[in-house]
Length: 310
Ligand SMILES: Nc1ncnc2c1ncn2[C@@H]1O[C@H](COP(=O)(O)OP(=O)(O)OP(=O)(O)O)[C@@H](O)[C@H]1O
Ligand SMILES: [Mg+2]
Image (cartoon, rainbow, N blue to C red; front, side, top):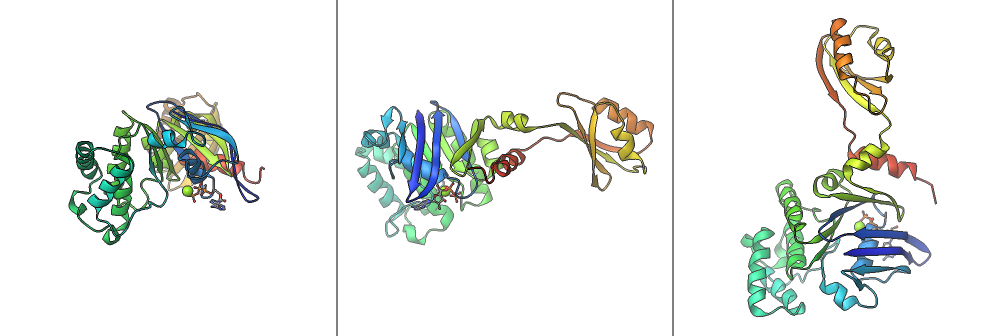
């Protein structure tokens, strides 16, 4: 549904993205993850025909975003980074105006307006003038506008920015439910958000894609060791050395407070041996659990490794 090949964008001499390939299949929900200035918004602006690429091609639902942009834009619901709303309009007025721009008929407009107002939690403020809404509510209007014409492809640039914690959860659930009928690409630098909502994550840094996979596979790919966290009530002086001496243990890293992180070779599961060993030494075993690597760790490792690489 979304396809970019060799996408490159220069702003003057500054290259914002370089040689970006993206493929998103129908019904997929993909997270576009990267630090500030990585090029997320730039790529999304090209996909939505706001700016042309300097090189490369992009298509949405089979329509070229440059040569067939009217058709490609018909297929897209776009939530830009800063929602562009007519601030002197009321919410319903604005949505009706958007429906008009989209060429929607009267009956369809009424039905879809009711749906998006309800779905985006706007019922209470439907008659408010947009300028009087809080940031989070304006974000909701932006989302409502993107969903209004029921497009097959949704492109959301940081959809949860400015929302309160309850609304963040609601919007994440909404996005997940949308993925059943739509293809969704969303950008974020909130890693747990990508891990929670997306089936696949594309990581971009300095304008280049540096990794692409499921959150689980990315974590596994970068993991160098299995780590077990052991919490002891009364660790003896020699815990670190004795644990290190166990076969399969690669390293022991004291974390303070009686907590030790024990690294073992990939694929090894030595929890039973560690438990037996610790209990045998009477160190007071309080907790023993595997340490999962988060997408945050992966992101940090990938983006710092690439630092300075041109
Ligand atoms: N209109 C513009 N003119 C010149 N440079 C620009 C323009 N828009 C973006 N850039 C530059 O392009 C690079 C990528 O910016 P972009 O907005 O795509 O990043 P981003 O990944 O969306 O970052 P953020 O997480 O902060 O939103 C940045 O170095 C930015 O300064
Ligand atoms: Mg951005």
